[in-house]
Image 1 (cartoon, rainbow, N blue to C red):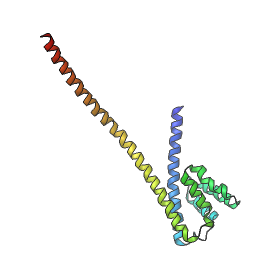
Image 2 (cartoon, one colour):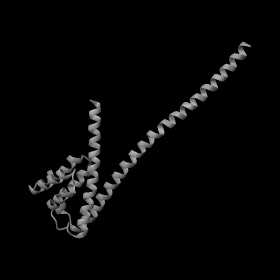
Image 3 (cartoon, rainbow, N blue to C red):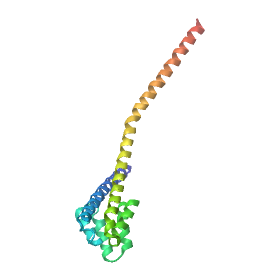
Image 4 (cartoon, rainbow, N blue to C red):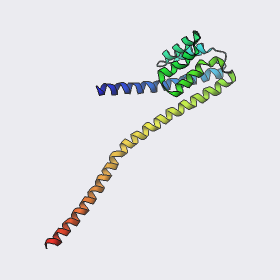
Length: 171
C-alpha cells in the first residue's frame, strides 16, 4: 500500500515539474507576443486560449480560466491555476492572467519579465536543493566509514593499553 502511495506522490512531483516548465514556456511565449506588439491588444480570453494551444499539462487550466473570463467570473478564473498547481506563485500568476485586460500595455512586458525571472529562480532553487540532498546522500556513507575507522582506532588503542596493563599485573 505504501509503495502505491509513494509512486503516486512521485507522479505528482513529476507532473508539478512539468507544469512549472510549461508555465515558463507559456510566459516566454507571452513575452514574445508582447514584444511583437500583438499581446497588448489581445483580450485575456484570447491570450489564455493561445496558451492552452501551446501547452499540454496546463491546457485544462488555461481553458477553464478562459471559460470563467468568458462568463465574466473573474474571481473563479483567478483561482483556476492555483487549483491545478497549488503554489502561491500560481495564485498570483492566475490573478495576473485573469486581469490581463486591466493592465496597461506598457507594464505588460515588465510584469512578464518579473514573473518569468521569479519562476526560473524557483526552478533553479529546486534543482540546487535536490542536488544538495543527493550530495549529502553520497557523502553520508563516507562519513560513516570515517567514523567507523576512528572508533576502530580507539578500540584498538584501548585494547592494547588493557593488554599491557594485564601483562604487567600478572607478571
